[in-house]
Amino acid sequence: MSEMQGSMLEEVLAHEHRVWQALVAGDRAADTALLAEDFVGLYPDGYAGRDDHSGQLANGPTVSDYALSEIRMIPLAPDVVILTYLAQYRRPGAARMARMWVSSTWRRGPVAGWINLFSQDTPAEM
Image 1 (cartoon, rainbow, N blue to C red):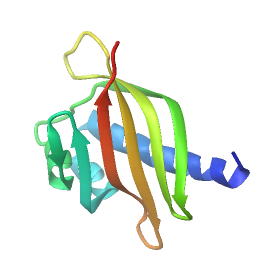
Image 2: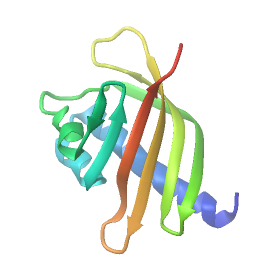
Image 3: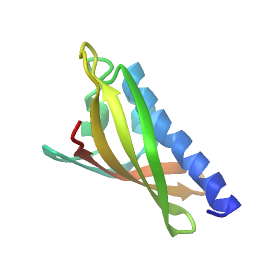
């Protein structure tokens, strides 16, 4: 990976962590700000838009703690990348961690910076 790609990976990964931190904090506004207006999420229960994703925080945090590993980045264009990783996370009140594979597409804009366009979660076996 080139130095430029390494720097881009750090930037995008920092934004991905902000999404997760919004889930931990129950911060609906922070979550919404990181997602494109036309964001699409593809999850085991189907499609979700930006309002669906941030709406899950209406009753507070949905994650109590998390860790990301096996991180990879696939550049698609100068300002568009796919980030892939394994997420281990715990829901509030849950005794055990759960795992899922995540792919997340990010685009860097001239004004808003990095914004999440698409995310897909695939449950991972324990």
